[in-house]
Length: 129
View 1 (spheres, helix red, strand yellow):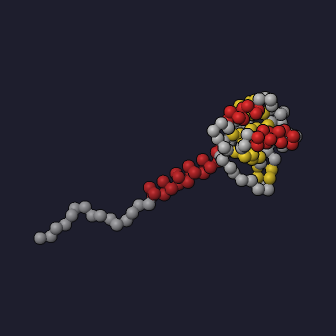
View 2 (cartoon, helix red, strand yellow; view 1 turned 180 degrees about the vertical axis):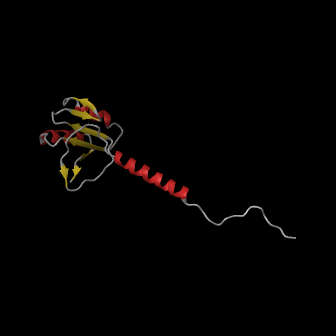
View 3 (cartoon, one colour; view 1 turned 135 degrees about the vertical axis):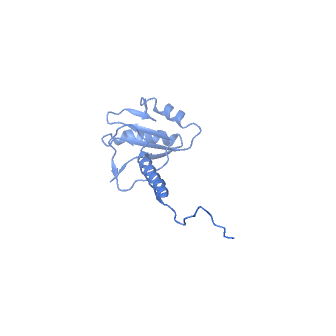
């Protein structure tokens, strides 16, 4: 009594679908890794020997014409402290300062002093060399 099956199972495994998935994941991670730059405003950042990426909760941008932005919202220099205070409510985060390299250092120190008075860490953003 010979029992035989009509269907033969082949021991070969096709890796083509697995490589498709791996390449799709690779493309996904390569594309999403370029979207780390949080500031949408165009400023000419100074360069630095070493840069560290930190999670920011509040972004302050100073353009070359001395316009101040808090989280991409334009504010006056006099209203900067109240806007930063409202942006930092309930958060003990990092205030990232994006400053154009032609802006005087006095403006950077002004913003850093306000953030320090509000007990937030200050981080100056620079582009790597």
